[in-house]
Structure formats: C-alpha cells, structure tokens
Length: 284
Length: 153
Picture: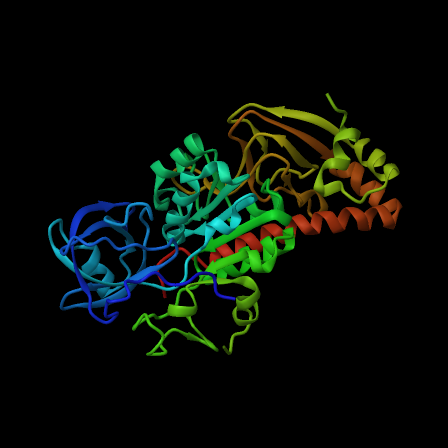
C-alpha cells in the first residue's frame, strides 16, 4: 500500500527544473548543510512531508534530496544535504545568492495526520531525521490532535546530531518525548550510547494505537521496523522512507525500481507490510 | 517504598518467574546507590554481581592509552547491567561508572550461581534472561560496528 498522492502543479513539466535562489546556507554538522531556497518566479512549492525534489547544481548534476522544511511555509524550500559525492558537494557549496534547479516535489508522503487520535513514534537514524522533520513540524502545529509523541533518534557521535535546537524545542514546547542515542560517545557526552532500536522496546507508547514513521539507513530501518512490529505496531501503520537511485522522479527511467515498485512514485514512503518481504531478500 | 521482591515482578527481566523464584532471587539482592563519578566495578576485578538500574545512568567504559575513557554503552532506568558474574573467569571486562546519581539493585553472583547449580530449572530461567540481555548487547555492538551513519561505501 502506498501512502499518499503526489503534490505537483498540474501544468508543470516534471523534467524542467525551476530556478531557485539560495537565501540561507547553514552548516549543521561536519558534512551536513541546510539550504533555504526561494523560487525565482515567486511561486511557492506546496509539498507534503516526506516528499523529495531533484536538486540540480547546474553543470554538475542532479540528486534526489528530501525536503526538510515546514510544509506550512511552501515559499521557503528547505533541504538538508549531506556532502557525499560530486553533486551533493556542489549543492552544499552553493553560496547565498547562487541559483540551483529544482524539479518536483515527487513521491509519497508520511501522511502523519493518519496518526491523529493516537500515539506517534518517529524513529530516525543519521540524516534520516531530515525527511522526518516536516512531519514532526506538522504534528507540532496540531499537537493537541495526537496522543504521546516520541522521537527516537540515533546519530554516529554527539557532533553528528542534527537540528539540536529543534530537538530541545520539540521537547520543551510541544511535549514530544525526545530520546537521542549515539553510536560512539566520548567521556563528556551526557546522553545515551547505544543502538537506536534499543529505545523502541522501552518507549512509552500504546503500540496498538500507534503510527510509526522510520527513516535512516536501510539496515537500521529493517531492525527498527522489526522492533516496532515486535512491540505490536501494525505493519500497515508502520512507514519507512526508502532511499534508492532516483533519476527521473516520475517512474519512467526505472533506476529506482524495487521489484514491482518505482520508489520515486510508489515511495519513498511505503508501509512495512509492503516492504517487509522486499527488504528481507538480498536478491530483489 | 517497595521492597526488592515487590519491585521485581514488574521488571521485564523477571517477568514470568514464579513467586518462589522471585523470593529466592530477592534473597540474593540488596539495594545500592552511587554518586556521579563513582564506579560500580572496574575492568579486571572479580565479577560478583549484576545490577538492575532503578534510576540513573551508568557508562560502560574502556580506558584508552591516552585521553579520557571511551564509552562503549550506557545503561539507564530499568536496564540490566553485567553478565561477567556468570561467565568464567568471572572478571569484569569494562569499567562501569555512574554518571548521574544512580540507584540499583545488586544481585550477588555467587549466591545466584549456587542456586542455579542446585536447581536446573532455576538455572535455566536465569540463564535465559541473562542471554537475552547479552543478545541485545551483542546485536547493538554488531550493528554499530557497521558504522551505518558513517561515510557511504
């Protein structure tokens, strides 16, 4: 089962990038940066949390990047990008005032509103917190509609923790139970050291009435989804954001194919009842 | 304040044990308290207990050749700490340091080993629970060794 429909302007050619200007450039960690963009034509880009765009550094190439900004503010397009290759390096080095190309938004969203009236558990690993951020902001904007909300976040080291100010604010102002754990902690680190999935077994949520959203490296998501299902979260209420080699963004080129699915249009957000048989097989 | 025997059945580690086993294990236990910076045990020392942390935070650390100790794991409220008491030669393999005010229940390893040797049903129940803790720790260590959040291959 896919999760929600794509939001895209009906008149837009999905292969033609729109011009965007970098308005803000922030370094989040050693290798991760957030760019705030505004369109040259002044048109906003409505999106649903969980969707991605194809970001283009002109003359270098394109890369699929999840939107990390606030869905209530579609005039400011925000992306959090990790410098891992030639395209992402060019993107993160884009100075304020420079132009980038954007196609999209593409793909399915988290549909976190389906969790209204119940508990919501976000499980993030590494930069996987960025695609979850818009959904967390959506919950914060209507916090009273949800029961207990937990954010369980694993990072490599304390220096790799993303959105530190957000984490503090979500806890203090929105009553979100935020638990952060790191794989490698130094002597001075006062938080948890351990695997993020260990937080799931002890998390205070009603598994029978929980929507769980998971994003991170695929191995981590597999363990997290398994732990959530073991706790009693229904597999169709357990959603994962898959990372694949998206190219066209519209289900034509096949680069992101996962057996019968095109992750760029059927995903990236998919439910665990669909993904479980695909994730557990090496040959797919 | 609840006694150890009253506290134990609510803890996941002891769930499923009958009253007689709870009473038996509680007879090997006493409550302990540690100030921040105080060590529960040191690497290489005889391992003579395991701990159920009731409140607080404990770092499992290994001393480095230079610089501060490396933290390999932390344990928190309701976590179970220590299995070296069950595995010869019964010596701790890490340091455990309280980093917050910590209250725990310490279970005497020698006392438990005696009871396990005397009654295989007790021994199996105990072993099954300790192995579950060991399995979680091994799983955590293995997955973290993969360095999933590190540089993509």
